[in-house]
Image 1 (cartoon, rainbow, N blue to C red):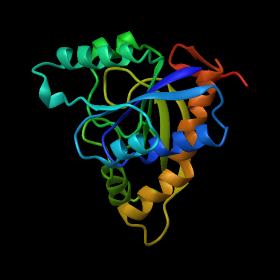
Image 2: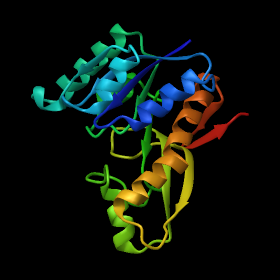
Image 3: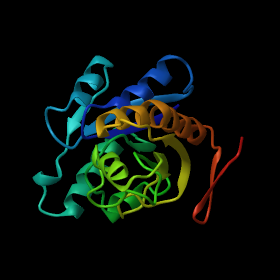
Length: 208
């Protein structure tokens, strides 16, 4: 059984997508054993409660240094024997200490086709706003392994989503979630759990 720790900062729709895939049998051998939120009051914590999953708020603002924050996260994950960390709409930067501890075992989903509309400051609805402002015809989502810099690390999956006339950032955000994020993230977890993601330098080979 792959023990997963999910880190969240908002409503937890990607957390719910993972829970749904575990529930319907499409993520066999996977279990979410811990949910960590970056702040109080987010609905993702309620999703964890309803699913009977232990949750905790560990806020970056509570620690003087990034190193101290990393240590608190590591201690919590180790206490739950977490083997794979999934960033499901998690907005805080992880430090080198944490990313080294879980090297090649942290997966993130980002709402754009990296390297477009990514990096520091590009989170939540912002990538969708920028895509519309720039006038691109397609956007999408990326699932990737995590390195210390924002939205860096070897790419596992990308899926393009068309931008349509009349799109607002909110409409586009929902379409990207439905057509890309909620499908790609659980699928990446499945492949990881089955040992089918192989890193070759900066490239991820999928061994189906």
